[in-house]
Image 1 (cartoon, rainbow, N blue to C red):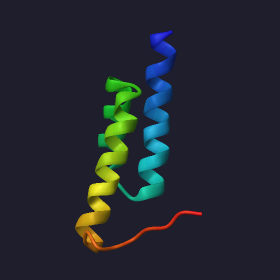
Image 2 (image 1 turned 60 degrees about the vertical axis):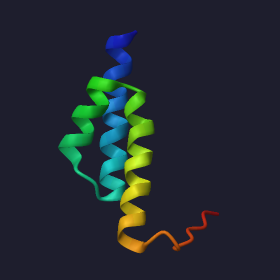
Image 3 (image 1 turned 180 degrees about the horizontal axis):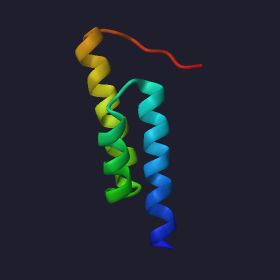
Image 4 (image 1 turned 90 degrees about the horizontal axis):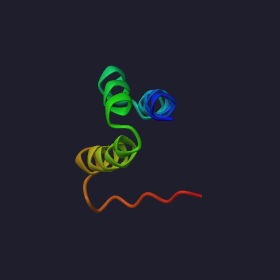
Length: 63
């Protein structure tokens, strides 16, 4: 089961990194090695990049 889960998490991290403009190789490798933990780390990294670019007062509303 682990051999199926890890490559799927790597593929998902690749798609998310491509969609959000982050490093493809880095997040694909990290997703393949760490598994589902990498998805949480990805969301934290994406949020921190948004704060760096736009500032902490920037409000992002998702519908």
